[in-house]
Image 1 (tube, rainbow, N blue to C red):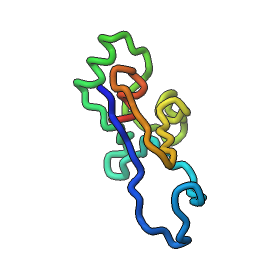
Image 2 (image 1 turned 135 degrees about the vertical axis):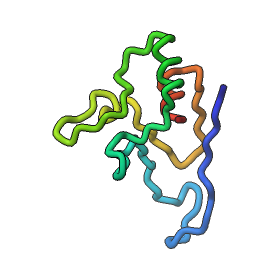
Image 3 (image 1 turned 120 degrees about the vertical axis):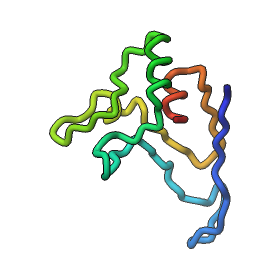
Image 4 (image 1 turned 30 degrees about the horizontal axis):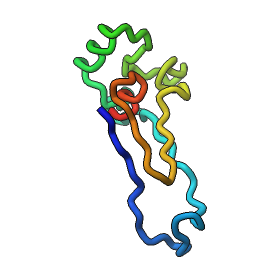
Length: 101
């Protein structure tokens, strides 16, 4: 399935639009939930099980250790970089599925 992501145009303080705009890409990654002290990944246990059955070998656990970077969630691989244009994510692709979640 294809997921389309578009920027929402809204007036900016600088008044520039489209090609004139100097807006930077937005980078999103899994953050640590302050209450549970676990990564907020959006993946359910069922999602993780399905990915494992497909042969995904990434460590998708949501366990957070403040003394050690997570081998997957703190790597560049799952980071979503939203440019200032339309982007498509194909959820049949494992990494795109994880990014959409």
